[in-house]
Amino acid sequence: MVHMNLNLLMVIAVVVASTVLRGTTATERLVGGSLGWNVPNNRFFFDLWSINEGVIHVNDVLVFNFTTGVHNVAVVSLSAHDRCDGSSPFQLYPNGPASVPLNFPGLYCFISTIGSDCQSFMQMLVKVDNSTASV
Ligand SMILES: *[C@@H]1O[C@H](CO)[C@@H](O)[C@H](O)[C@H]1NC(C)=O
Ligand SMILES: *[C@@H]1O[C@H](CO)[C@@H](O)[C@H](O)[C@H]1NC(C)=O
Image (cartoon, rainbow, N blue to C red):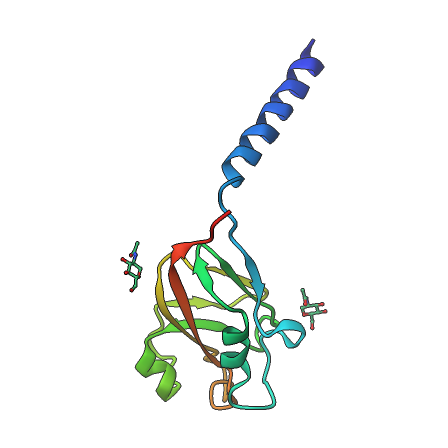
C-alpha cells in the first residue's frame, strides 16, 4: 500500500513537471561551442558565436564552460565591457560550468574578470529578444 502510494506520487510528480515544462522551450546554449569559455584566437570569437546562435530568447540559458579559478563570468555594463572593467559587476559567477539564465530582454555584456582574460577577448555581447520562444 505504501509502495503504491509512493509510485502514484511519483507519477503525479512527473506529469506535473512535464506539464510545467511544456509550453516553454528555454534553450540551453553552450557558449563558444567546443572551445567553451576560454581564451579565443581572435577578438570577435564570442560575438560571432552569439550572432551565429540566431535569435536568443528570454528564458534561454547560457552555459559557460570553464575551469573554476582559471576564468570566471561577470555580467557588466556596456562601458565596463568596453573598458574591461571588472571592478563592479552586476553578477559574478566564479564557478564553472556556470549556467546564466537570461530573464530579461535586452543587451547582456559578459567578461571574465580574471587576469588579462578580458583583454584577451573573453568578452561577449548577447542580445536577448523580448519574446519567449514559440512552441
Ligand atoms: C567542458 O570543459 C571540459 C574541460 O575542458 C571538457 O572536458 C568538457 O567536455 C566540456 N563540456 C562540454 C559540455 O563541452
Ligand atoms: C518587443 O519589441 C518590439 C520591437 O522593439 C516591440 O514592438 C514590442 O512591443 C515588444 N514586445 C514586448 C512584449 O515588449
